[in-house]
Length: 323
Image (cartoon, rainbow, N blue to C red; front, side, top):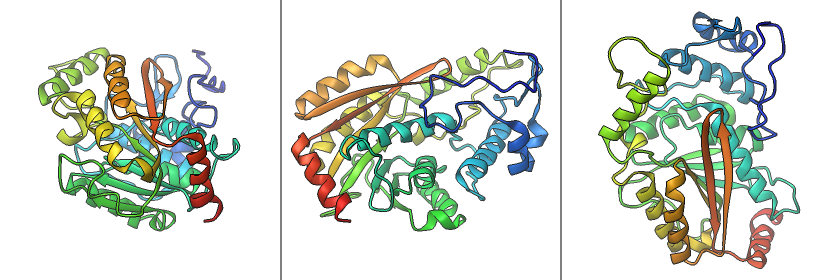
């Protein structure tokens, strides 16, 4: 990295081409959008402006500035301890889903309120609906089993005029259900998205946190608080992401004709073989794996549909072209 702070940062070629965050963070501009960020910005070892990414308050201030500067979100906040997501990676997911949907629209990304996306586990931050509705003008339904998360997401939507007619929040009442009780009769979704709980237990989540802080070279006693935060329901699920995704795949077959594409993030490469077996068992017609990377972190999106190409074309005619 150059020691000249005035030099324009190189593009991050591993990000999606439409990702607005490919060129890194312009902290001078971001501090104008979010003045509270200024207190956390300083020159790093390369003499380049940055923040201490191990400080959850700094990360939260950065997110507020990014959301205001790039997505027109004037008011965004989350309860203490809840997941504060890395926005560039979340934006990547949205852009790849847009590419997937464009395949059924002659290569043109379908935009506007006729598009309806289901966000499973939207969290207190409501980040995917915020980005997707701001960039592509899509409608979202965000779900969560945590009433505090739902209330926080509703507050974010209510505090930003351009989100009010784009995002609905529905609380999942049954922890064993993903789509049941959420997708209503005759309702159709163009895509479902999900960032599933990663860890298999609270102990595993805490150990991962300690390891992460060690990698960040934080001095002092081991930490059990993530810089990006996260509550139990956000970070772990019995059996980890493999069990959660398997359940999602099994239950997707129950609403097979009400969604064009089902998608989920898969963080662990070892999870993939079980995902593919589950998709074969439910007879998914088409399965895609899309690789994503953010710095050293590698993940992927797995997408599946129960509709053949003719049915997908009919879907577009019914839901998009006649909307």
